[in-house]
Image (tube, rainbow, N blue to C red; front, top):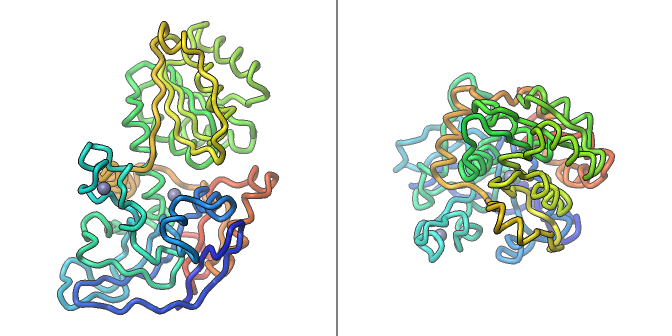
Length: 360
Ligand SMILES: [Zn+2]
Ligand SMILES: [Zn+2]
C-alpha cells in the first residue's frame, strides 16, 4: 500500500510503498478519508521531533484521522464494514509512571503505543488489544468526515479550557487566531464571560475569530500597543485568564504581561525552540499569578469532544481553507512554512489516497 512518510529532516516527505496490514481475527481496518494537517506535523518534518526519535525514520504519521471501516476480523462484532469512524492514534497506557501519577498526557508509552502506520497510510489497522473503545469513535449520521477529523485538536482544546477553568463573568484573552486559537475562542463563546478577546497579528485571521465567537478582536501591532489596549478594555485591571495559542516565546511573555493580579495564563502552543521566557518573580509571588501548561488530551476530553462533534455543537464551517491530496503531502507540509502562505491559512485538510477533493 502507499503511505506518506517523513523520510528525513528537514522536509524530506515522500510517498512510500509499504506492506499493507493483514486482517487478523481481532482487527479493524480503516481507510482514512480525511487527515488534518497539524502544525506539529510541520514542526516534525522541519525540525525533527521526540516521536521520530522514538519511532525512527521513515515515520508514517497522521493523527487527525477520520475514515471508513473497510474490513473487520471474524471476532469483531462492534464495528462493521462501511462504519464511519475517527481513529484516535495516541492514547495513554494508564500503566506507566506518569499515567499512574495522574498525568496520562505525559504517558511514557504514548508514541510507541500509538497506531502505526498512522493516517497517512492507505490502510490503518486497529486491533482489539489497542482498546477499540478509546481508538475508534463512530461518527454520527450527518456529520462530515471533515468535522470528525477535528476530534484530536478539539480534544486538546477541551483539555486546555478544563485546565484553565474559565469562570462566570471573567475577562478572557486568547492570543493567536490560528486554527487552535479559533477553537479556543469558539468553545469559550459557550461560557458567560465578560470578555472573550482574540488577539492576532493578522487581520485575515481575526475575521475568523469574530465568526468563531470572540466577543472582541484586537490586532497585535506590537507588545506595548496590545498591553495598552487590554488595560483600557479591562479598566486598568488586566485579564483574569489568558490563553497563549501561538507557540512563540514573545506570545508567552505577552500572555503574562496581560494578566491582572490573581490571573492565570494557560500555555497551549509548543515553542520550536527552548528560548527562555521572562517572568517577574515578584509578580508570581505578590500577584499570585498562575502559569499553567497543557499538552494533548485525556480520555475524558476525547469523549466530550466527540460529543460536541457528533451533536454538531461546534461550527467548523469555513475553517478549512486549504485541501491537499495525500499524494501532495510534501507540498502540504511545505505550504505553511512559507510565512506569507501561512498567513492566509487556517486549517489544511489532507484527503486520503484516491479521495477526490470535494468538500464535505
Ligand atoms: Zn494534531
Ligand atoms: Zn502511560
